[in-house]
Image (cartoon, rainbow, N blue to C red; front, top):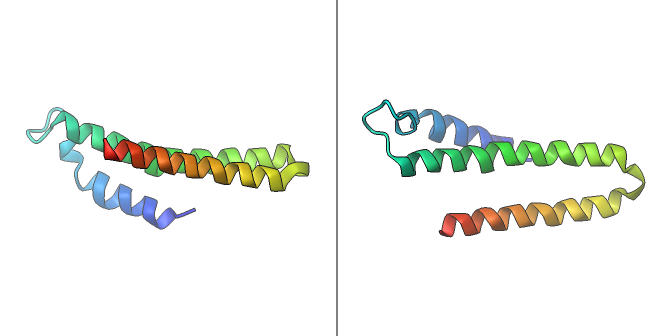
Length: 89
């Protein structure tokens, strides 16, 4: 889990550019708002939700832990690929 990258995104990109995200500021633009939502969703929400789910699965299905870890690894690759394809659009 890369928490330093998550903190960097939140600190330097999201907090620094909050004026681009609120509609009552003069610099507000819808594409900027969408960019901020995308950053928060993929770099914060998805990362912590994924690892929380992984811990829960490891606790519930501890007998098949190797299969579970392989499945979770493939899911992470799928999420990263989805983020990459979304950014290409």
